[in-house]
Length: 568
Image (cartoon, rainbow, N blue to C red; front, side, top):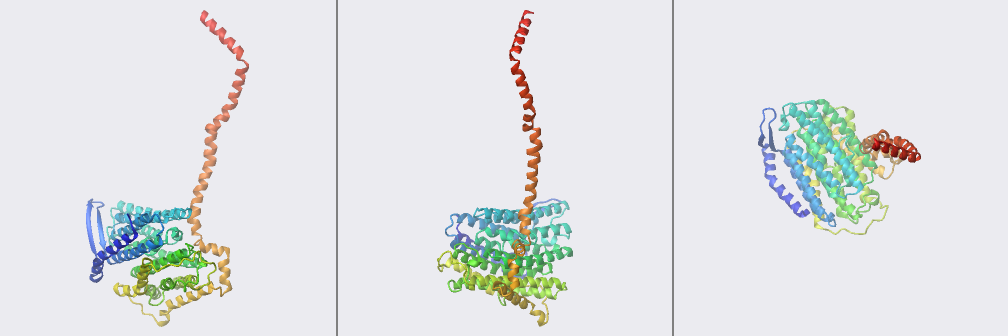
């Protein structure tokens, strides 16, 4: 039987087993490739490749570390759930799919992990089996299915062209294959316009959110773009397109988080904003910084989700920010967890998010980029600080507008606090440690002090913006958030939720209704059973009436005719 503690210890042991390979690839700067040829063909040979490189092993170690802590947290968070073994089995299959995606670089074998992530995420979002979770799981599955089809089309195109990239750097530059791979990765990483499924996936249990939105499902798309970056950098058109899409994603997510009151959705929108930051840095020819931000973001976002799950558990599973507040006295340890993870999300100095985000901002200021795009990125950075401060103020210091749903006080359970303490340690020290361990082959940006302070200026501007919007220091901010059109635009993620969830189903439903009305209820009925009855009924009535009136004469004629026949 699957048990969260046993699965967590199994992941810890797995992490210890891959540590020697990680140390070897880090300090020797080498890649381990194991190849097994299982189908040899002159046109398209197929082989199973296992690649252990620096990025893949770091991501695997991060995934296993976070997953182990999430499973330990699950033991307390879902202790009253009757189906915890099923949940644990789904989480382990989710982790296994992510590891397959990381270590198998071949497109065909990589599809096993890719589809495994989609299937297991669908089952995890559907875990509670409510109408809300069913709708969210359907949106998640259908959006990810677009990426699955594009991967299949890419494989078919490669086989038709008599080549298949067994390793990422062996793929020749081709616009169609690169475009399909990038769009497939965009569906998995929730880039615009495929952004509506990520907040909808909050219908899953909070431990799933801590895992899915930190280091697995959403980062799989970014990791695929990093792995096949050799295709992207050869086609400048795709780089500009990705730069534009990432800017829109980060800004829309930041603005939507300012108007959202659901705690888990605010954190999900913050993930969406950071995914835009990663894709932005990738389009700026900075794949190593994108991967560095991916790892640091995974650490503090998992901590933020687990702290939010504890608060939701404390409030009897109420996720409304307006029901929170004044928790600094009642839950000081959880408050410190929320503050450390939120400050890391803002990019506060010497936290985990500071090292990656500051490097990205300095590199894009130093690059020959359009200044408008630089300002858009700084705006997205300011919005990150704004919604982070708004979240932290509402949770910790704001006066509680409603009484707590329960007066239940969390006991200092080691199974609930130890995972958060481990993640908090990595949130504070992980950024600096990874900065020194990971060799980033990026040229250092030499900037004057005025440009060097752009990152801090954007952070403090966003903090002031979030504080002013939360306490309504300016009348225009209250008017904007209370305006129906503006609020609908923000909460629906620029109406993409309506497009992805309603408009796509409205057209086939309307077409089906039209066909049912005109064909099944129209011509088919007229030419079929109902039409035959309506046409034959008057004739039958006439024949019956005629035959009934002349029954005696007909019998007499039949009798006389029969007698005449026998006489002859």
